[in-house]
Every structure is written in C-alpha cells, then in structure tokens.
Image (cartoon, rainbow, N blue to C red; front, top):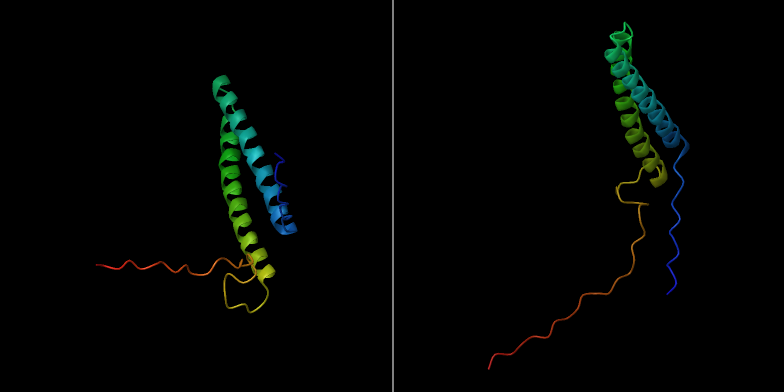
Length: 110
C-alpha cells in the first residue's frame, strides 16, 4: 500500500523566522548561564551573582522573543489576508464543496 504524499508546509515569513532564531539564541544563552550559576553555587564562587542576573535577564529576553513570535505571526497572517478584509477567515483555507443536507426518511405511525 503506497504511503500518501506528504503535505508541503508553507515557509515561514522572514520576520517570523528571524524572531524564532532570536528566541532560540536567548533560550540557549539562558540555559548556559543557568548551568554556570549551578556550577558556581557548587564551587561557592563569586560568579554566582552575575550568572543569576544573566539567567534572569535571559528569562525575560526569552519571554519577550516568544511574544514577538506571536505578534509577528499575527502580522504576517494579516498581510496574507490582504488589506481591508472584513471577514477574519478570508484567505485562510479554501472551503470544499461537501455533500448537501441529507433528507432523512420519515417514519409513519400506524
């Protein structure tokens, strides 16, 4: 039995892709600073305070980037729909002509 052809995903717009890359970069730097803070706490080092501050800033930056992804996706979707479109579903998915209403046979009471 042949496998169905995979649906091709649409490429993300440039601003959404850039925001996603920034979010991954912030997340990776945050995780690295968290590891440094953990190791500095084990070693009772003076690096603990700067590492914790970097971790806190990284969490804030990651949340900011995730919000930026959501906003840029909404903006890209509005651009795709076109200007002055009144219907929010305009341009989303094409409607398929499905079967019409089915008439149910009525039962007679005897």
